[in-house]
Image (cartoon, rainbow, N blue to C red):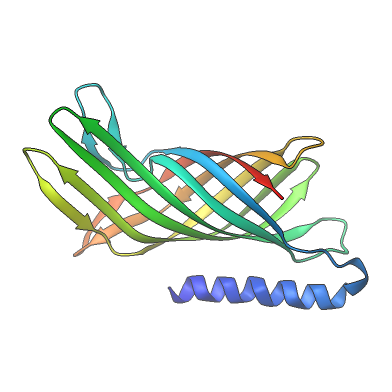
Amino acid sequence: MNILRSALAIALAASTLTANANEEQSSSPVFGLHFGIGFGGYTFAETSNNEEVEAGGGLLFGAFTQIPLAQGSAQPVFAKLGMSYMRDSVDAEDGDASFTKFPIDALVMTQVNSVKFGAGLTYHLNPTYKEDSPYLSGEVEFDNAVGLLIEADYSFANSNAEFGLRYTKIDYEIDGFEIDGNAFALTIGSTF
């Protein structure tokens, strides 16, 4: 948690200093929403129809803000801060299973033509696996986890829409036992 707080503090301080240094070119933060689908990581459950619950899989939706850090330079640099909800689940004849989490992201990004790319930290709150089947009924709450995040977004011309690809490197732990949460996600978002 201290790493995430430090990263957020640095991003906010840098944006404040840059905004003060470049008041004549002031630019407001941009807000947006994103939706996506993830895949990868440890497989918790699999049905006879090959549907899976994965540690890095499922549907993602959330909100983000982009804060300019270097407005006067030829190469734009900005902080991207976001919060999302992610859930992967299966509903089968013999039971249900799901894995949920709340990712908080802090990235430093730049843009070249229509492509934004960058890297940063992600902090996953309350990662929880639930199952209700003849084999297991209950939930497992993993520790909150810190991971690395790499992201690239393509911005469509004459539009606020963007298509993205992100890679998360993270492990979830409970009582010294770790599972792999490394995953890719495809996203589509829009700023306003």
